[in-house]
Image (tube, rainbow, N blue to C red):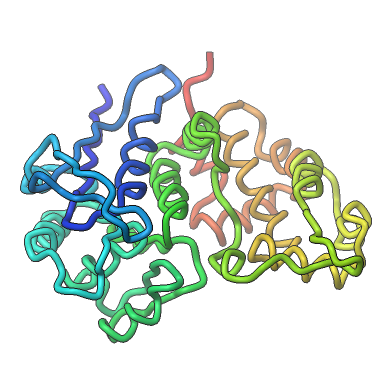
Length: 324
């Protein structure tokens, strides 16, 4: 019988309401192929807590569990906090340090990274936070290797994410790590969000580049076309032609709107599609490679090894759902 994974969502002083609720929503929405619920979610904190939105106090929250109950959880998540430049919530810091010490997976959303850093969990490790707070985090904790351009960082047992919606990216990533891409994809569809957004925070700092006529170039139709064309051999010229742009303009607009290049985005989409097929079908690895545009099983194995640290066969063994 599969054991239920407990997730404790901390409610520290000044917690960002969206971050806290988003973590609860993602993990509570997960269903395995047999319909079972793999996560138990509990909010832990000293009540009442005044939650914020855009640094404005908005409502009071009564946690269902005391803060110390988080020490019994398999995963502990701390949301962003208002006033992260002030004295950190000492009890929350102590709980995070103790939870990590006993082997819990610990994660932060947005400026919750300041609490992980204060607990000593990010020393000499890469981490991220909201791009507006990245410089402040680096100054306050020089031992943290701050990566301001990414959506999240996975260090294994300690994870950090950028601001607000990046918390959804991080939580879905943890679901994917625990139960595979197909379960995470179904959860993302239930939440009406993408499973993963390729690229980083740069796409949100800068504005979409205008086209020659002064309007904004939108690539959504081209992205949808790429998703439906993963089995095809595509070049930059093919993608640019579909978008009605030159290759140079395509690269510029693509990076401005997604934070990455067209070919890197295409490779990510192919790997994600291959993960789903390996989990949900009994197709041979060679057939999956062809359907996802890798050209050969050898090529797909190389990309799996580089991006996921494993082989397609080992991935299927770990995450394949029982077929009806």
